[in-house]
Amino acid sequence: MPVKLSAPRRARLSMTSLIDVIFLLLLFFMLTSTFSKYGEVELMAAGAAPGESGAEEDRNRLFVSLGGDGLALNGQPVDLGRIADLVRSQPQDSRGHLVLISPDAEATAQQLVDLLAALRQVKKLQTVVLG
Image (cartoon, rainbow, N blue to C red; front, top):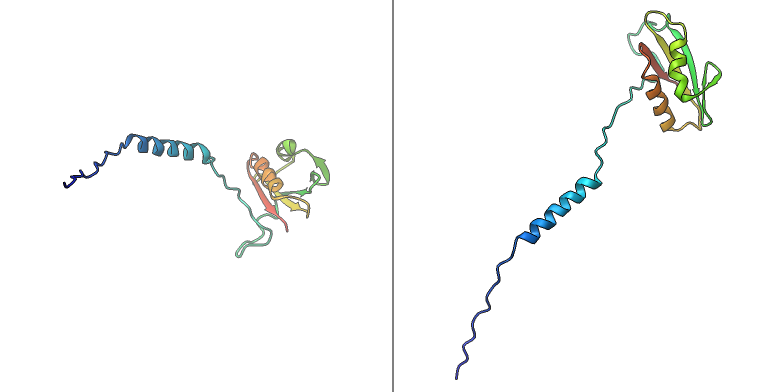
């Protein structure tokens, strides 16, 4: 007597759990990614640009030495939080200040960026990084 076997029935796949997993993955990647805004820091290296005719000659020059142990403005130790106020208090002409920044070997890039961000508050200020 032949046995009649029925073909196995395929159950329908529920898409609900797949959608839940996709939303959980989307939520995970949204929460773990960074949404920070990257800012740019203007940086001008020392040296005369072609066609430049000594426009900085009349500007009041300030010298900032940046070391691993701290800052010095014109040879006097200063705090990073007060440097913008000290630069503002220096006498200036109508074109503003020219700040020459000299980082030493122990100065980190983060210290230089922090200094440039602090000096950005001063109007009519041009910074030049030496070496």
